[in-house]
Image (cartoon, rainbow, N blue to C red; front, side, top):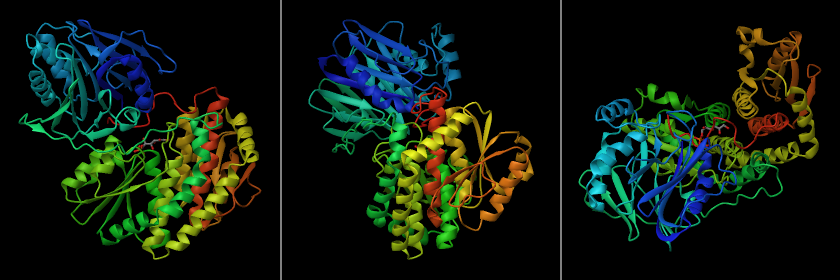
Length: 591
Ligand code: F6R
């Protein structure tokens, strides 16, 4: 997590520029933020807790500066723990993304040397280690050497930027955590994501592991971390041209992105057939395919394993991204690991892919962010083309992943056209389910459930992952406890939780699960459950019916929408921010 951004170039209101860039990186963490600029013998810093919002800085003009938006890992959400961290002499400041796994021993070493640390963060050790070695030097090349040496002492996946006021440089280095360098008319930039550079850089270069880069007013120079020999950066045109942060009349990005889904699914049907065919070929050639993802992406992956079974009669394994590295022993050079990730930066996915690569497995990817770490690591990367997803909640990229997997399953079975037609049919049903009357009905339900203690979602077969995703959508944004279950599991313990009035979302598409899920709903109702049925049929067991025309194998696309809307409406009814729920970040770049 955490977003970092730095600039060296012509003197300007660097603080405000950095703050503006940080607003684009806030999806990586938004519990606190800070900006530092180098001026007349010191580093001026402003930090604050909370979201950036419309904050304005009071920092002097400067030609060098950087900033950080934080998702706390080590140390609470306080001003002292916010980055940048500055050394006591005021020469060196550091911002960091990642976790320094050995920070305790480094901290003890620094304290034993008589230096006091003022924050609870792991990051602050870097400040002290660098500053101690820099004392008495004023040579930019020495700064590169020293930052490189210190970085080699850090364990874990990290990216750091060191501002050295004495040499007027920013020095940046990374291990797995991403860093992108940019150059433009006014100067050079470094950021954790090219989205933050889009407005300024005419060219970008991805920093690779074991490279270190130094930025000053002459430009950006890269070196090999081991030999310190100069390297050429691979400059290229940015793949992200900035994004529209316009709400276009919607009250929040969550609502906007929920409404974009029919178009996203149509685009998968009309533009991604070639990609689906390519992935189908990879799956067909592999001896063992594994779909992996985290959170919502894991539910898309699980849905994919059901779709491949139903449509192509092909077994595809599903493993949650954060668990995959513990189950890699069976991978061979004939395995295909297909990672699903909106951001392409989720560390558990990156770690799994590294593990799989070590075993010689082939890597497929379904990613939304082009140029992301996963995108660049994969042998075959399929772009979802869903457009930037700005709400922290995944909605349109979930349906894009499911749609692309559905199309791939049809492609594998030689029935591509059937898959495309089904997606177009599903998109029409999605459109209907977003009609204002349908939203009003869900708003009414949110009014009723806003004080509920718990909510349950159940489905069988293809609807089981939908139930899991529905529960996640609801709990992460409304903070109401919600759980998803396989309908058949109710009697094995879960039903003990049902009380008078407990809301139960029941997904009942017209497939082989219908009879059994309705009998499960009847058992829930007999114990007081308030049944909201999402189905084409209005069964007498439903207290409330959310009608959705049946779309067969594409039902996960349509049934996702009522749950997304319910989550959003519950958040609004409870006075919460639908786009930035507490404790979350859009890109989960630490373990
Ligand atoms: C939930 C949500 C998360 C992400 C998960 C994986 O709405 O957004 O569960 O799906 O953190 O993120 P990506 O897809 O970027 O790997």
